[in-house]
Each structure stands twice: as C-alpha cells, then as structure tokens.
Amino acid sequence: MSKICEITGKGPITGNNVSHSKRRTKRRFLPNLQKKRIWDQESGTWITVKLSTSALKTIDKKGIRAVLKGK
Image (tube, rainbow, N blue to C red; front, side, top):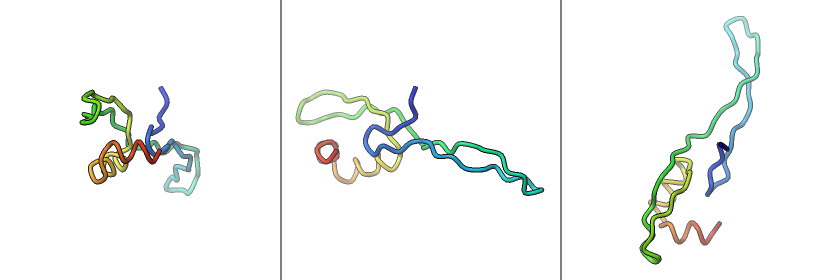
C-alpha cells in the first residue's frame, strides 16, 4: 500500500535518527495520510480518497471539484 497523497502527491522522505552520542541511523518520515469518503454534490456520489491532512484542509476551503479540477 503506497503512502502517497492522491491530491498533493506528498510521500515519505528520509532523514536521520540522532542519538544522544550523535550517532546517525537512517529513518523515514511518513506523511499524515487519512482515508476519507467525500460527498460530491454535482455527481451525487461518494468519492473515497487517501489524503494528507493538508489536502483535507484545502478541500474544506476550496471544495472537492475545484481541487480535483486543479490536479
């Protein structure tokens, strides 16, 4: 299962865990993804998407149609 936002395209990035002794080991930073069902007024259907929380805020602000059209 991919960890990529379907609207913004955000995905995992890599970085380092840094211990107290400053030893570095690789780690992954995962995006905050949520699986949501969103009601589309125009088509009268539910759309299921995997979104980052920032994309969810954008949909609340602009609407699902404007966000999908801009994609």
